Image (cartoon, rainbow, N blue to C red):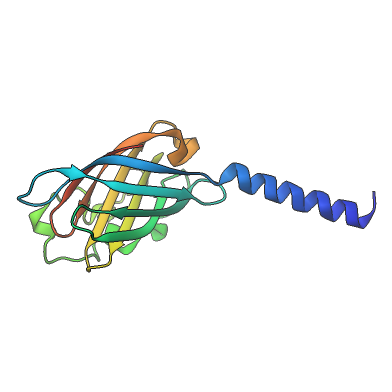
Amino acid sequence: MTRCHIGHSVVMAVVAAGLLGCASGSVTGNVTPAGGAAAPLAMTWTSGLFGESGEMSAVLSDGERFAGKYQVMTPGLTRDKVEAEWVGDGPTASQEDISDTLWGAAKDPAFVQKYQNKAIATLHGDRGTTMLCRFNLMDGAAGMRGGGSGECQTSRGAKINAQF
């Protein structure tokens, strides 16, 4: 086999792996602002090459746009791979208004084990709001593309339920 054919084969294998590894989808659900009525949620996700992490975006009913990353908590993942809000460095002003089961959760030494084969996300809004999400994956190895459900909370007290 010539060098050109070998190089072409390697490129095709990398492209095929990338196409198989990357996926995207939508998340449906409702967002309930603090003291408000539930409204539909618009959220999407796109996985990275191997599906263990990716990008998420959301638009709330009030028009605030969020964008950020999600991470599937896989065996061997270390806590330093978890974004700041998950280790207690997030916005503290309104954390007491919502459940503390998300804010600062990574202070628990067993955090990675507790959330293994689940996904967590940190999204930042264009109006200064932070959103934390955790998703129960139907198939941890498949990541977000395997489907599941979850919940999110914003630093302004909104609560979100989600299915994908």
